[in-house]
Structures are given as C-alpha cells and as structure tokens.
Length: 317
Length: 317
Ligand SMILES: Nc1ncnc2c1ncn2[C@@H]1O[C@H](COP(=O)(O)O)[C@@H](O)[C@H]1O
Ligand SMILES: Nc1ncnc2c1ncn2[C@@H]1O[C@H](COP(=O)(O)O)[C@@H](O)[C@H]1O
Ligand SMILES: [Mg+2]
Ligand SMILES: [Mg+2]
Image 1 (cartoon, protein in one colour):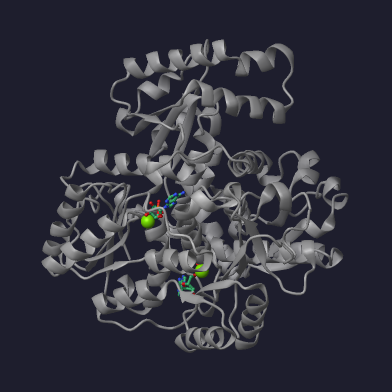
Image 2: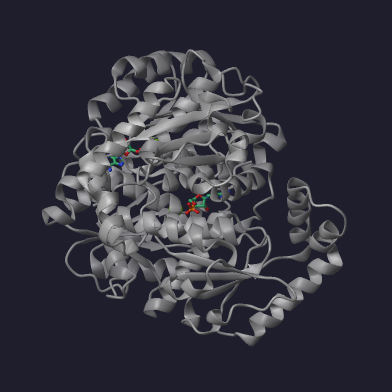
C-alpha cells in the first residue's frame, strides 16, 4: 500500500531481488500508466497521493494496482506505442505533456483505442495561466537547460552539510544548522534529516543514548531550532528488531537495543531531557510517514521564525 | 526560477538569512496559495512543475510569483481564514482536500469571495476511481496511521546505506549497492545518490581523482550497475569555484581544484576511464537538474535489468 511520495518507485522488496516484476508481465491487478515528457516524478507523486484514497482496496484488500512510469516521452511514435500497449493491458493513462499538440494527440489516440486517460497537470497549469495572464510555454523541461541557480547550490550545500552532521557527528557545527533533531535511535532522525536537506534546510541530528551526555554545544545554540522526536515504545521496538536483524546484532547488544525494558527506559530518559528543555517542541512520529513529520517540522520552523498571524511557508519564483 | 521538485520550499538565500520574506508581506508578484489537508508536498510539487511552463515570465523577467503553502488544513475555520486572506492578497488558491465536503466548501467560499481556485488532485483521483470502479475514501492522510511497510524499511535502509557509502567510503560494500555512480568531484554524485536513495535504491558513489587509483572492487562487481557522470568543463569550473569559496580553499589547493587546465585534465582522465569501461553508460549532467539525471539513471537501470521491449518502471500497490 502506498505510504507517501518518496516511496521507492519500484516494488523494492520484490523488484530489486530480481523477481522480474518490472518486465511488464505483472498480471493480477489494474494497470495505471504514467507518461511524461519529463522525469515523470510529478505524475508519480500525484498518483501516489491519489492512491492513498484507495488504500481500503489495494494490495492487502485484494484489489492490487500496478503503476508503470514512462518518462522522457517526447515524440509521437513512442507515445503511440505506449497507448497501444495500454489498450492491450486495459490500462488507464495519466499524462503530463507540456506541448499542447502532444497532449491533444495523447487524448485523441486514447479515445481512438478506448483507453481511459487524463491530463493531470494541465488543470493546474491553466489555473496559473489565467491567474498570471500569461500563456504556458508549451516547452517540456527537457527542451531547456536547468540553470545553476542559487537554489541549486543551496540545496546541494544543505545535503552535503546534513550528511556530514548525521548521528551527532561534529557538534561544533550545530550552530550552522537551520534545524536540529534530537531523539533516541530509530526515531527516524536520519531519513527525516535527509528529506529536509533536499528541501534546502541544513539539518543536524543528535542521538539520545542512555549514559551518554549530550554535546554541550546543543545547549549553547539558538534553542528555537531544536526539535525533539518521540515514538510509541511498541512501535520503536518493532523498528529496532528489524534494524537489529539487518545489522546482524547478536546477544547482549541486540537485547539491549530492542528489549522492551530498555526501549522504555531510553524513551523515559529522552522524555526527561525534553521536560528539562521545554522550548524544544516534541514531535510524535508514531504512525507518521517521513514526509508527514517533515511537514510538521517545516511548519513549526517557519511559524517560530516569523511568528506571523497566519502560518505559511512562502517562496519566491 | 523553479528548477525542479526538490528545490527548497523557501527562497533560502533570502529567507533563511531572515529577511522576513516569509511573513506574508511579499509585495511585488502574484500570489499562489497551496492548501492541503496533508503535507502539501503534492500541491507544491505540481505547482512547481507547472511554474516551469512560465519560466519566460517569472522573477528574472519581471513577473514574480510568490507561493504560500498551507499544510494540515483539516477544519473549516482554518480554511475560511485562508480564503479570506487570499481574497485580500488577490491570490489564486490551489488545493488538495480529500474530504469532498471540505473541497466543495473551498470551492464555494472561493467563488463567494471572488478568489480563483482549482482542485488539483481530484481529476487524478476521479480518473483512478472510474478505472478501479471504487469510490475514494475521502479520508485525508492525517486521518489514518502510516504503516511500517516493507517499503518503509527499504527506503530507510537505502538512505542509511547511501550515506555511509558517500564519496568512495567502504569500497567493500560496492557489491551491495543497486547503483554505483562514478565521476570527478562536483558532478553531483552526492545529491544524485541521495535523491535515488529516497526512491529506495542503495547507491554508492566513487570519485575519480587524478593520481588516485579507483578501488579494485569497482571492477569486480556487476558492471551493469555502474554509471559514469560527465559534465561540461566550463560549467564544472563555475561549480567548483563556488564550492572552493564556500569551503574556504586557498592558494594552490583552490587553483588545482578549479583552474581550467586542471578541470579539463581531470575530465579527460575520467573520459579515458570511461572509454576503458564501455559497459558503463556515461551520463551528461550539464544543464540537468538532479531529478532529471535521476530519471535517466533509473530508466537505464530498469531497462538494463529487464531488457524488456518496452522500457518502463513498474510498481505494485
Ligand atoms: N522546469 C521546467 N520547465 C518546463 N517544464 C517543466 C519543468 N519542470 C516540469 N515541467 C513539465 O511538467 C511536467 C511534469 O514534469 P516531470 O515531473 O519532470 O514529469 C512535464 O510535462 C514537464 O515537461
Ligand atoms: N496515504 C494517503 N492516504 C490518504 N490520503 C492521502 C495519502 N497521501 C496523500 N493523501 C491525500 O492526498 C492529498 C495530497 O497529500 P499531501 O501531499 O500530503 O498534501 C491530500 O488531500 C491528502 O489527504
Ligand atoms: Mg510527470
Ligand atoms: Mg498537497
């Protein structure tokens, strides 16, 4: 079942181990084709979110869906080949095609072959066109060169910074972070840090480990950029058991790490630290996908930073 | 100007340094409000892609756009407050609201206040509903708990793995990677690796440095998962100059790193390595955003893996 935008774009478990699910021979299940003249990530993201509305009937409930992403589709021949294949597979085609004649051809060919279809970005583009009073260029992203904007460098710097600060490395740099995450092992600090870094935030994360003192520097930086993460002990134990297995932990190490008594004690230890630092908001991550926690952190970050009457995250284009 | 989905969701340069652009007082420029009952990332991603169609008129061309993201909007009061503010600011509202009565209210209120608006996910959801013959749940993502799916663990493991392999660390693990990227410094190996890791691929990257031998292990693993990256020397020099400045390189170190003679020699050295290893596809990254290069790599990865007649990336829900 889908659980968020940045899930693997392949059914990893099966795929990567080579069961060949990716050869167009998935049988059971309805097919959705996503076609883009660009990367296809926009279509994938939207379809993934939309499929969230059908969780009650997807794989576990016996109504599986197979998605197939076709990216870089910039010529009519490839487009027609895809439409024909969709007709054979009884697939739905959802597309994002900047060139309006390509889009019209897609629609036309789908109608001709009896393939249900939808243009999933055009309504957005048209609403914006009407608002700006400017016509869309009709040029796919491949048709122009991406510039080395300040944004580009900023994002790359954020990723570089964040990787280097992972897991409490280099406390001396905590003051250079935009956001600092604090929590016990396996509360998702690393994937959350990376998710935020991709959005341009420099993130440092500091692990809470019983018996290990937190770096002094943590208490010397601006306390408003620090966020505590907490999680339900039962869920944490599940995550840690999986982790311990994949790391090949054995004996005492394994039990300390994932035994309930230890897990609970460590969460209580963390909770005492959070109580002592009431300025840090504490975010409950249980049952949240990474991108959901990220949304909460980013929202709070901007609210605290600007203390405006109407919380929002703004950006200039 | 927008250059891809994973740009910072804030105008970092200005914002993070605290010029207060995020307090709702951006003046010049048309406003677009994005409203979601969830994280808002889907709306942000779609609007970002759509704005690509207006690059010819955005900031540099004197027709700036300001976007404002409102996430977690689950009750009517907050929705109404946002609509009223949009009316004041002459903003366009683009929303994703799973609950159809919330969506209807949004539309109704916008019409009432003369705010142009659009539901940007519903067309996709409805096309899928018709295709599956199943009604959407109408439940926002916040209304359910994300599960600890195999996908979840796979993605986290991919991110953990990828961070640890960055910049040629631990060549002994190269065989465990799904994808191995090879290229000179600043061809974007790290951000590309991280982008792919978020999609569930375990990525290792190996730097090419003149005078440093590549790890033996690189030639012992499956050669089909290795990708070379190359870039135009002028563009690389620009990137390196920026990098050298931000790292505070001086004297000889700086000139070696970013002087044209050295940059060209290093790229030629890389190109000789690529010629000696003709199985590695060489991807030109010049002028490509990270997500564009990622799309190329993923496409080739799946094509090579399955050698199916119709290249596609498939996934099961
Ligand atoms: N920067 C951009 N410039 C022009 N078109 C873009 C840009 N980014 C995305 N698009 C278009 O938006 C749609 C979705 O892009 P993608 O997510 O790459 O599939 C495609 O039709 C692209 O051509
Ligand atoms: N896993 C999910 N389950 C239910 N609804 C979802 C899911 N993911 C996204 N959505 C909905 O899709 C829209 C876009 O989500 P978001 O990207 O979080 O703003 C919102 O209306 C969400 O409520
Ligand atoms: Mg797309
Ligand atoms: Mg959204």
